[in-house]
Image 1 (cartoon, rainbow, N blue to C red):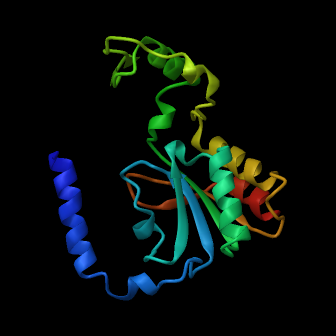
Image 2: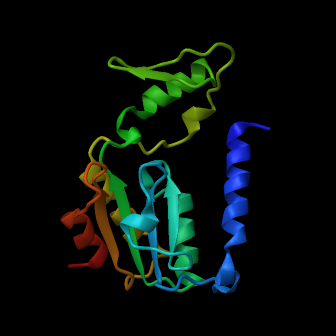
Image 3: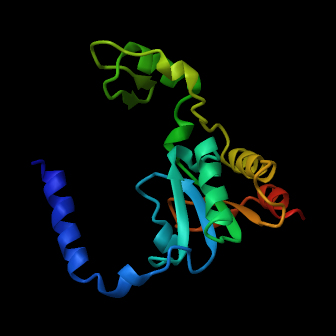
Length: 193
């Protein structure tokens, strides 16, 4: 058993021992909103948005992008579980800014091993077979944070399954300060102002 697995299971035992009445929380989020944000380990949506268990839906992926699956989750969040407001929150210093679709496709075609990055960019250090399956994925890389937030809010807003009455707010989380910084052009599209 790996040390990571042991640590996770030990932490879960401690958590479960003090679980209390959390098993009685209703399925719909109590504060009736959802957050789409990045999977980056430096972001803790519970802390930066003041959440407790049962408060909100948090949907995370690489870059916090409005992929088809993220939109699917938001639609379910609204249609079946009653969320009434959505936040799209990207962040500064995001790993999705460090490569392009071409770079990731090339790395995957060379090897499926973990790549390395240095001052000259990403390099494949693996050996063995790669795969061209990465050619069929839109990696949704980021070249400009504010622009990507605005694009994602617009993509969600314009989706045929998203009702016009749901406000969608666009923000960038600053990893150096912990602050949420509004992207006004994103919120303007998402709220219709």
